[in-house]
Image (cartoon, rainbow, N blue to C red):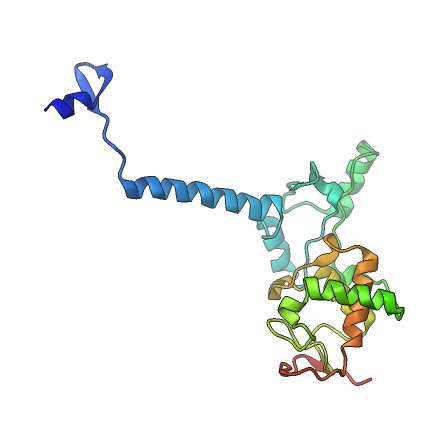
Length: 222
């Protein structure tokens, strides 16, 4: 009875008082987990932009080849992606915004299909060495240390999933293959670094590494 009295709250409403009971342990942990989950969700979708939001999912439904690419200037404070509705049309709305605010940052949305640039493979030993270093840091975990393949395809044989040649390899690295989990590296690597990695990948062709993954994609003969 004494313990019950001590746990009474001071609040009194028409003679009715409440007990200050401890919350169940499971409920407290569930509350903490939901907070942690909310933080991770916010970072995943809204800070680092790894996950696709509803607008991107909508655009991907319309075009399976859609890849989201934004400039750093289009991020609020350089971190948070700006919100755009599903009706946002970059060419139309950016033009209108540019006329209204000539100095406003433009929203640029690119896709591999719209990228018509052609690239030339580098042959300079220093550039190839830089590409190898980047490959080991960024690509080896999926494609293998020697390009033999792993989670990703074998890069040493005559079969290519997304096109052979320096331009196709460059664009695959640049825009990634989000549907298969490959990141778009254009925000992490500079254009010259992308070219160095792509050029190094081409040097792996025909190297016949041990434990090579079975061929995938289309046969492309030199």
